[in-house]
Length: 358
Image 1 (spheres, rainbow, N blue to C red):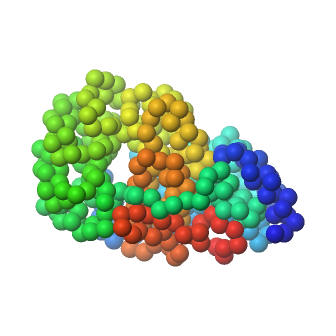
Image 2: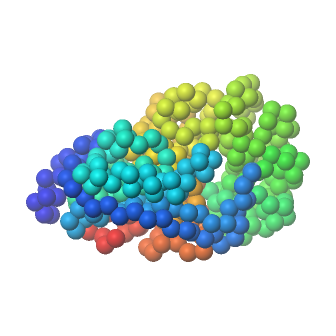
Image 3: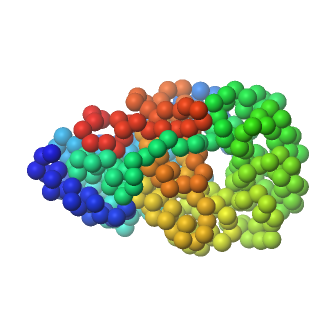
């Protein structure tokens, strides 16, 4: 271990989320946008995605490099073009040696902060000569059971896609708020996959009248999770709603402050690094959600394995894992996360390990 790395190793044992781990001194920042192409159009309530633009941040100090990838939050007007401008506007303070705690003071939650935060985590890991999971204060990560998502389509098409996920043990279905069609989708997929854990994601597509019609069908089809039925800002519509099927917040809770304000409406909190602004706040949210008696889920925007890897660390603390983003891409980064037997695993050389070439 080099002398510089020895000096940082002790500090690296600070608790998770503590940015005193590394005072980075000066670093070199590189930032660019990339356009990821999906292998097929992907439909959710109100949107069809064919490409996924992302922002890639690289921080370099000497021979040590840290990387972060972020897609932003499309429904919050948080797009990579704006993220790129935001990061370039902070170039001077980033290159002066910004810590993760300082980053949380300078930037609001969102994609720009996520890309920088994750790059800082990997840079710190390499400077400290320890893996990022050790900086986070956890045991060695293990493979996680993950959901595999079926985009909204005709019932028979969704059933066929669910059947083709032969290795999947858990499947998440995208619904659109068209209640009769959504119920047909549920029936078709459950008939095709009687063995699978099934969750559904409404992406804000439901109002009280249609939700009341959907709920019995969820029970009849042994659905284990209902994600984001209501519109963001309309959480009070969930007052008195039957909770036989647990309800998860996605769009309704973006970051730590909103967790405090809105967790009481939900049973499960879906944490995404793009929403909350990085692994630092993601870990804080997971801890706080547990304190509030909520189950914890980790999700993702469509991205490469470079975006999944920090979320994989967060996933070690979660009850439900949805880290299937690279499955939808024409091409993932190499090396990448590995999908096998319904699980996702992240080899050390993907992100966050010392002495691995970027």
